Length: 492
Image (cartoon, rainbow, N blue to C red; front, side, top):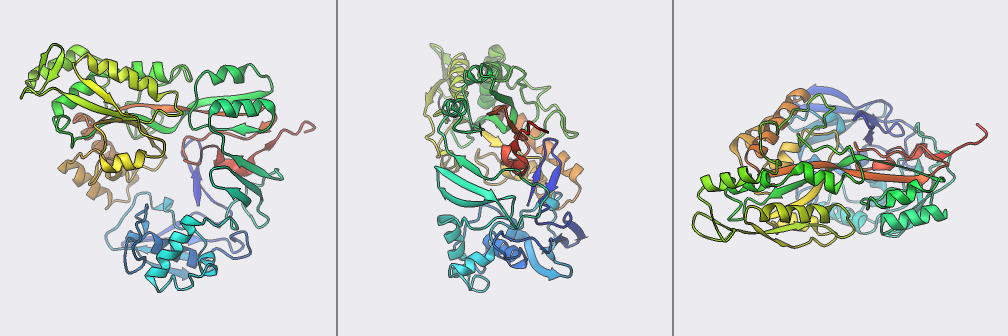
C-alpha cells in the first residue's frame, strides 16, 4: 500500500491509490481511501471495499468476525466501520476515542477477497468460522495468481525460488524495463558472490555477511556493491523476570561493563568503518526527533571500575573473582543470540563474555537456532539476549511494542504505561515523538537494554544492473523500487 524512501518520506502505491489517504474527521477518527478505478489484482478483478472488509475481519481479534484467529496486526480491533463512498472511495471509521498520529500509514489491505470466495470461502462476510478458514487457506497455500504491484508471479517454490513477469494490468509509475525477474534463495553471502562472479545471478542482498566477501567483490571490475547501516538495530536486552536481573543495580553494572563502541568497531567496523554507536533507540541522528539519550549515562562505557562500584554499593561481593549477590549466591547468566550464518554476532558474543568476566559473571552461552528467535522471546527463554529489531520511519507504536504491557523483557513502569495510553489519544506526531523518547529514556535509565548500532547491510550487483538500491526505511530493502530495476543501456 505504501513504502518509504531513504529519507523516510512515505510514498503511496500509485497503482492502487488515486491520491493519498485523506483525514475526514478526528472524532471519531475517519479516513478516506481514494482508489484508482483501474486498480486491479492483476487478474481483471478490481480492488475494492471487499478487500478492506476482509482485512478488517482478519485482524479484528473478534471471535464474532474471525473465529479463533490470532492476528499479528491489531489494526482491525480499532475499526468501527468500513463503507463505500462515491468516486471509488472507501471510508474507514475507527472506534470512538481511538487516535493514531500515523493514521496515514495503516495497512488496510493484504489479500484479495475474491480469491477467498473462489477457494470456497464465500460466506466469509457472515460466518466467522469461514472467515478463519480463508485466513488459514491464504497462510497455508499462498495464492500466486494475483498482484497489486509492477510484477506478477508465475511460479515459485517456497524457500527455493519465485519467478515474475511484468503485471500487464499495473498502472503505477514504476514501469519496469525487465522482461522477467527471478528471485532465488542462496544460503550465504559467499555463495551469492560466487554466483554473481560466475554470471548466474545479476545481484544479491544477503541478510548477513562476512566482511571478507567485500575483498572478493572489490577485486572484480565487473561487479559493484555498497555497504551501509540498514533497518536492523542491534541491542542487548535483560530479562527482568530472571531473579538476578530483576535487580536494577546488576543490570546497570552489566551494561556499564560492556563497551558499546568497542563492540561496534570490532564486530561491524571491518564491514563499515564509519559505524556509529546508537545514542537513541528510536531515531537516527539526522531525524528532527533525535536526542542523545545516553549522554549522561555510563551504559555502554566499558568502565569496569564503575561497574564494580555499582555492585559494591548494592551489597554484592566477590569470592575468588566470582560475583556473589548480597545473599551470597553466585551470579550466573544465560546469554542467547543467533550465530548461525552470521559473522557479526559471534564477535559480539565473545566480547560480552570477556567484559562480564571482568565483573565476576560467568555466562552460559546458548545459541538460538535459526527461525526460533520469536518463540525464545515469547517464552522468556533467556537471561541476556542480543538480536536486532527492524526499524521503519513509523514510531507511534514503539513505546507500546518495546516497553508496554506484555513486552518481552518483563519491564513494567507506570509512567511508561501512561505514555502508551496517551499515545493512543493523540494525532500530534511531534507529541508522539516526544512521548516515545520519554519512554525510551525511562527504559535506558532503568537499564532494560543496551543499544549497539544499526547493522551494516550489503548489496552487490553486476556492473550493468542499474537502480538497485538498499533502503533502510522499509523491510522490503532493495525491493522497495523493484519496478525501476533494469540494465544499463549502452547506446543511451
